Length: 245
Ligand code: OAD
Ligand code: ZN
Image 1 (spheres, rainbow, N blue to C red):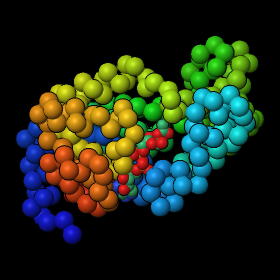
Image 2 (tube, helix red, strand yellow; image 1 turned 120 degrees about the vertical axis):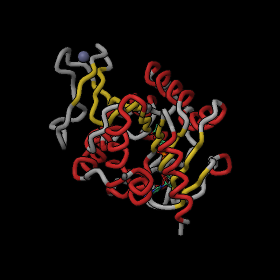
Image 3 (tube, rainbow, N blue to C red; image 1 turned 135 degrees about the horizontal axis):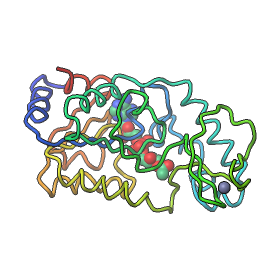
């Protein structure tokens, strides 16, 4: 049970902030029925990341990697944003350019809930990237008619437009995320295990620059000790309570 006073404190911090940022992870989409990575039933309990989410794995067996992404795309296509996604979209509505959403998720549910200022640190599962000509495009077809998919421009092999283990984050997106962390007064960290870097370094960065950290998670994480407020529970329940007017 979260004391009402903690909810009230979060609401006051948000109301008093001139800039707010939020960092989200797979947990925010859990209530939409999309599996997380590390929890019970998490994807990395049943699959090895090095078989499916590295450039080496793709090089070895593009078909296998695409089959896994095609399956995940199917799950995501059937899912709908939940109240947590909608609450963050509402916060953007209220704060406009004073709010920035940073996500590690590739599911696109923040956009489907109406968020527009979204920095996608790990790319987007609906994007494809041509390994030959570099063309980036979106493809929402589920399932894909042919695996592995080929580039419409040059016939080259397409890969999912996501960041894999061992790869750098998109540079400009990462710069903007760091800037948002440095300049916010409050950082909401929701539904992330806070163990994957560099994303996990954003909260410590924000704190060094004076932000208050509100963590929303069903479990304790390595960030919890440094958070100014830990709200233990589901993001679909708690985000509306701290954001809705
Ligand atoms: P994880 O699966 O590591 O962590 C999900 C977190 O959400 C856990 O801390 C859970 O306790 C919490 N959680 C679960 N359900 C929740 C709920 N309803 N409300 C609030 N919290 C809940 O997912 P991420 O932290 O996003 O990267 O993982 C980070 C990155 O590791 C992913 O982007 C992905 C993965 O490997 C790549 O694929 C590059
Ligand atoms: Zn191409």
